[in-house]
Amino acid sequence: MQTLYSSTFTFAKREFDEEFHALDKAIAEAARAIPGYIGEEAWENLATGLISNVYYWESMEALRALIEHPIHQEAKRQQARWLDGYQVVIAQVMHAYGDGGIQHPLGASQTSRP
Image (cartoon, rainbow, N blue to C red):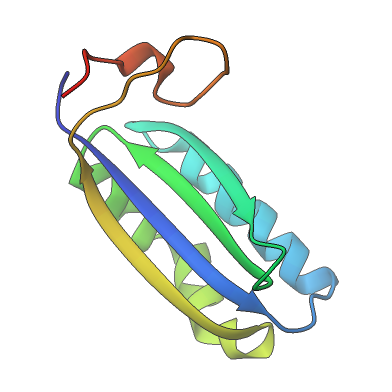
């Protein structure tokens, strides 16, 4: 498997308005348009109320293209309006495998188990 990366954005939500949803949609569209974007998934922990968005990338350069994108920069400037806190984790994907029973962004990049 080639070297892949993930970026996980976990946050506690405050109040979301139309501007938040429009900016969130624009960021997702920008990410999908970047060469090297693989896919994404999102999770909500009902016990804590935290939400995580995970994006998968073929390279750090592709990930940096999103980080430096003007729409992403605008969202960072305004995040306190909509979020009660956040954490970002950038990670190198060491292995990806499964039984094929579910669709996953890294399904085509699967390797044998570690």
